[in-house]
Image (cartoon, rainbow, N blue to C red):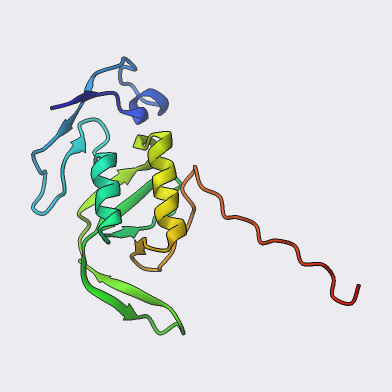
Length: 149
């Protein structure tokens, strides 16, 4: 097991020690179908594995938190949602992993943003982030000059 320091240990409030090197990446699933490795402190999927699966087409399950997402395996290609022009992948009903964005390095945050900007990232319902991850911002649309000026 690789020794690591969970960023949540160091930055969240709680009665635990804030010393480096107390956490590990664990490979023993806690429930059937869980993707590993995961953090021994917070339970987050390993960031390299998270990015690998997102790049392979697994669906990101949005939350109402800017630091967390879920990961679902896609079982069928895009399906219609009833909203014109919108198609979402059909995903398994259970979550394969949770992911805390604090585990991403700066380079991995850029890799995640690139997957998002390329449009290759799949989302579970409703098909987008409720709240953008804390390290992302939507680009503002360029201002248009007044017509008729």
